[in-house]
Image (cartoon, rainbow, N blue to C red; front, side, top):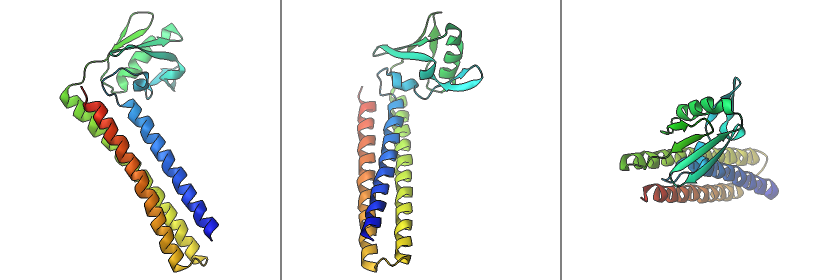
Length: 187
């Protein structure tokens, strides 16, 4: 029975790690004042009728702390890329100079910073929901083992261990969100 319990713990840790990695990727998309190519990672471009991630049709670079450049691999895609950036609701206005798109990143206002913090906290809540769902799945697996002859004491110990694993991952999520909030609110 202990091998099965260890397998449940390992699976829970792996699922929670995936939730944490997803959170980190989502937080990269939320800008903290500096221009970063990651800001455009969620932008989809209409590439000959099919939605395609921007990094598959163009190079995105940061020229300086306030400017991004997007160099399309095909010049005729500049308009579609600009439309994709505008449709992504990032509050960015790309300028087309015929060769590439130049995106000036406006400085964040206090209100916009608070919106970004709220968005980051929302992503943190999504991660916590995922972690709690993983906990529920693990507890269901332990209940199934009880039906197969797991003792009451071992079941209680397993539930405590699952809760400890869950608590540690929720603390990691809170730490990530706190760090992102500091980054965003630093002028």
